[in-house]
Each structure stands twice: as structure tokens, then as C-alpha cells.
Image (cartoon, rainbow, N blue to C red; front, top):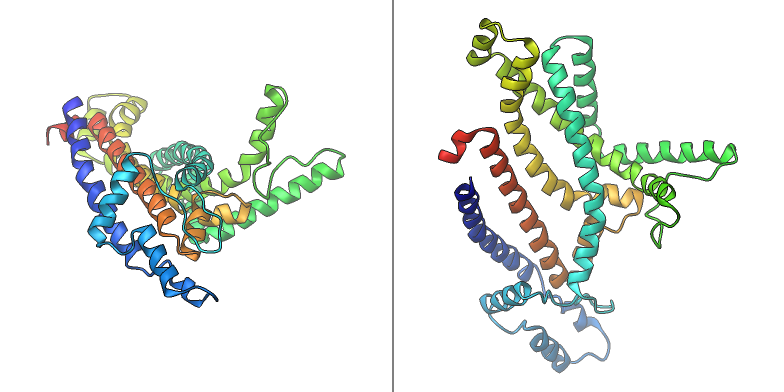
Length: 332
């Protein structure tokens, strides 16, 4: 197993290098970050040339990439160069946004995975039952609704719930417009209460979106396994239904869901733009939109490097999970 993990790690390194170079070329050739300076009164060609030299824009793209890569690996992620904005260190900006989004995505994905796998297994075992039809209808409803609608509906229910609490003389509990500044204070019970009220709505919105995919994949995978030859053989030997499901079918049915989880986690982490916008969270999605709008190459490269690393990392985790669930894969 250790050799298998090391082999997958070694494969990930060139993938990351090629991916980072491709991202750097795309960002560097998308436009000139100093183009706006030409339209500013009082800015001369000498000023623009000096800025290009200071930022290294006068060098070949391969040299610029190499300088960026060595600085990035040494911990110097550079500074934001968005014009009209105060210079900002890229590293703390990206890590703060990652921490903000990560707290939402981790909770949402774990809840979605647990609920989706449970519903998928039950729907497959009770195929064509009322539960199966309800689970299928709910999943397709979530698939058909735009992410923006799901987030807005969840937020509206949260506002109505707060109004009910207020009409009863109680404080509003659910946070619907960004996390509370200054963190949480009070004893442990109060901190948990406030923390839950802050994270509940955006976590539920993200969870509902992912839940549909997990439940459908798990149901389809379980049905395929339950109708396979080795399961029929196990039943013919008189093994109980619960043991057939959990000892023989469930483990094999998790392999495609593990693939989906690893790919979906990275995508949600970098793509929770709409949910963050609806609930007023300044996470990775907001940082990406601002970086693109202001055409900030340094911030964009920091964002892309982090998300690419996370996606490769979660694919590595999926490969390890494959090896655990099906030892034959480790020998391939």
C-alpha cells in the first residue's frame, strides 16, 4: 500500500508542474495588467516601462514562470497588483478565503455524502418502492433547480424562521448575510449555538446540491452490484440479506461514489461562488471574481495554484480509497 501511495504521489508532481505552467501561460497571455495605466493622466511611457521592469513583465514568459514557481515554493506568493487597490499579500488573502470556504464545504460535503449514500443504498434495496420514488423525485428536483434558486430559497426560509423567533421575543438565530465579525464569545454552549446559526444555511444549500448526485450514483452502483453473479452466489449459499448488502455489495458500490466525492469536493471548493454571493461570505469564489474583474495576475495564479493542488490531492485520496476498497487496483 505504501508503494502504491508513493507511486501515485510521484505521478502527481509532473501533473502539478504541467498544470501550473498551463495556468501561468493562460493568465500571462490574457492581457496586460498595466494597460489601464496608459489612460491615466500624467502617466508617461517611462513610468509604464519602469512598472513593467519592476513586475518582470519585460522578461520571456518561461523566465517569469520559473521565477514565480521558485518564489511560490519558497513561500513568497507575491503581491496583488490590481490597479486602484492597495497592495495586498497573495498568501494571506488566498489562505483566508480558503479557510472561509473550506469550513462551509467540509461540513456540506460530509453531510451530503452520508445522507446521499444512505438514501442511495435504501433506494436500491427497496427498488420501485414509495421510498425509492420519493428519493428519485427529490434527487431530480435538486438536479433541475439552478444553484442560485436553491441558495435563495434556503435563505428565504432562514429569514422567515428568524422573523418567527423575533415575533416570540427571541433573538434572531440564523445568520443570512455573512459570518459575524469578531468570531464567537461566551461559554461552550453559546459558541456552538452561534456557530451552528452562522454555518447552517449556506451549509444546507451546498449540501442539497451535492446530495442529489451522491444518492443517484450510490443507487445505480448498488443495483448493479446486487444483480451481479457473486451476490447471487452469496444468496444461494444462504447468507442473510443484511450481510449480503453490507459485507459484499456496499463496499464495492462505494468505488464510483469515491470518485465522484473526490472530483466534486475540489469543484465545490473552488466553485461555491453563487452560494458565497447569496449569503455574503468572502471565500474562494468571491476572491476569484474580484481577481478576474480587476485582472490581478498574481492573485489569480495564487488561487489557481491552490485549487489545482487541492484537486490533485483529492484525486490522490480517491486513488488510495480505491486501493482500500478493491486491493486488485493496487496490483494494476
